[in-house]
Image 1: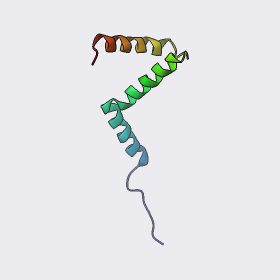
Image 2: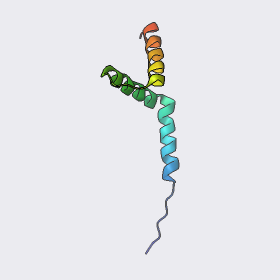
Image 3: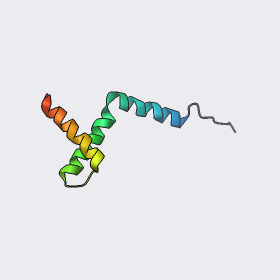
Image 4: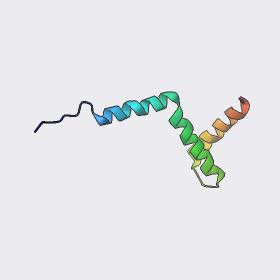
Length: 65
């Protein structure tokens, strides 16, 4: 019977992939889009998230694509 070994640590591999998402900004965009959708439905997202969401919205409106 042969003995198998893991060639790479799955925790480290996941962390590296998560960091790629952060570098591309994908995860941040998704989180803020989700919070914006929740707020649009009338769900309280909390004062800190609302404050940052309001700032992000103002920035988007000030510099449209």
